[in-house]
Image (cartoon, rainbow, N blue to C red; front, top):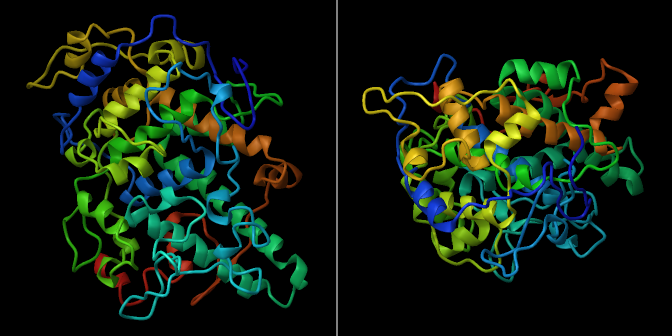
Length: 465
């Protein structure tokens, strides 16, 4: 199966546009029906539980690296995908971290040596840097992509990769000529990041059978050829499944328990360094589960501030509504994204989403029935409902898993400088070992990444125990 349309610097389509588009009124009602701080499923997810909270925001970091669409809502006439510029490259190349490099208009992201990235000066009480740098003239975060200041969690993930880059600079300096140092370091960090995305993130959020078939066995369903571009079915639907994983509160560390997600956003928007008291205990964040992947979205995402909206949906003209689920469904209308059932029939004919009778006041098809949408479900809602019904909210279902993994795998194969080239040359290839307090170690999981860069530090690490 080949994509319907393609444009490398803009967006593409996997399938033709929907012939009978959804109405804004129906999408508003469907979106508003999703508001709930707890899952509606009668049985708690698990075992296994949903992915850990760190993967909610690592996933957001990944999506920010692949796609950025700054078009406002309610354009007239509605644009076609090939008319919408993707302000990020369609590759996992960390351009959201590096910008255009140290000798470009993004030089303010870099130290004077032309190789190291600037990091924040604020430290934990035990001397560990954990924040991004600030613009000296505005005191705003200095980032290649300002969406990575959407909340204090993704902001600290961005800082982790700044620190990883500088760790690689320290390790390679002296063994690599200075003119080549930055490119060697960037390549090493990109490969490590791609390895984590492919072998940790996707493994955590995808159905294991789908993951094994796509990643381990290489049995993909989409033949991209030389036509890879980020499809709107991913950018405006599937990639946004993480909205359902957002919790209403987070235990940041042992002193900041049940910290409201509303403040997670508000604290990021203050023009200053982060409060050291908000430093994340990453051992806890890689242990505690996220909200289940389902059709329940926490209330805080229905009451976003205009500043949050501007970053959250990358719109330069934030307008009503301020409910993120409604905005996401509206985005699907703009691009005439086909129904979940249509995508399922094209991508995985064995995937089934069967209406079920209510149980103990749990009626997962109620909103769809009332809006006469059974059998023609918006793709984003379909992916969440599929995870809820078929995976009990623990993982993406078959269609969601295939769509997310096929696009990410397609991106890696389309990039001639990705780890795929290394693996094709040597199937046993692995990213280089990293220096740590305990010696040389591999980074195969997100938790190991945080440990290698010194977060949590030895004092904070005990918080999660």
